Amino acid sequence: MGRPPCCDTVGVKKGPWTPEEDIILVSYIQEQGAGNWRAVPSNTGLLRCSKSCRLRWTNYLRPGIKRGNFTEHEEKMIIHLQELLGNRWAAIASYLPHRTDNDIKNYWNTHLKKKLNKMKGGDMSTTHDGHNSSTISKGQWEKRLQTDIHMAKQALCEALCIDKSDPKMLPHSATYPVISTPPTTKTVPAANSSTTYASSAENIARLLENWTKKSSNLAHNLLSSSPSEGTICTRMLSFNSSNYSDVSHESVISAEEQLDPQTHDDQQETQIPFSMLEKWLFDDAIAAPQGQEPDHFMEDLALAETTVDLF
DNA sequence: AAACCATTCAACCGCAAAACA
DNA sequence: TTGTTTTGCGGTTGAATGGTT
Figure 1 (cartoon, protein in one colour):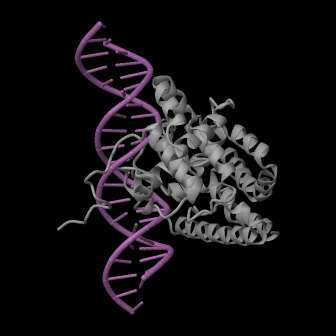
Figure 2: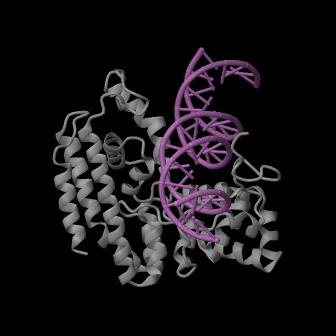
Figure 3: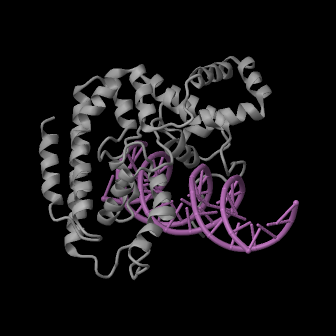
């Protein structure tokens, strides 16, 4: 007997999510907070398994997600971090705010891998992830371990900072892993959800645009049908008034600044160590020839750690 | 215009770790 | 301590789309 499926396959819908489903999910998370995914399908009536709901939220609907158009800046970071951490996309994503691990993974597989192949003259005698598995050095494993420890420390530090600060900041902090914060998607309180919801609306606004074009009648029906549905659509459409054809980092931040400038200030504060890491990444990318390990990595991390200690 | 091929990316699957009872 | 449930992660797939012949 094989492993049982993660959820009943009978009556479970698969494939692309519809805007209607997105609205239901976003609305539910706004009310209940992210977490307890097991309960989401039954509580929302969505014919999706819990995994699918979580994935849709974390990779697409979650607020603050920046999609497509990777900058050269981000590209270099990914290449560098991949070199250090391997295919640990979640860890890499923690260094790139507003990017999901899935997005980074896709970008790596579709763009960067080829790019590096070309740069190395097609000489890829390494494994699929660019590492030679048989010759991976002990030092590299140590560095990985050190990085993990460092990340854990920072996560703890941030958690302690949050405890001290306004509890309302928690959802925002949990949503934006400004620096190596492990995803903290455990049950997020519904409080302060207006900020997160606004960004969620931005994320699905583009879908809604097409959707309303296709079925303007349906949108109208939603507005005028049940009170709850009407509320959902009214909320969505109210956000639709702003221009977010391209949900860039800047636009997300500025939109949130308008809603809650304090949160942005806090975010900037916690970004200090991240900027240092970035500096290291780019300094090193420029200084070091391809494939060379940065010797001063741990030094700089230690320096960053000192900065974190200031909290 | 149609067929074919390549690319992209959202979503699924299976496993492992974490959380819980 | 152990067994079960839930969550998170990385690899993979396949539909959609765009480009080429």
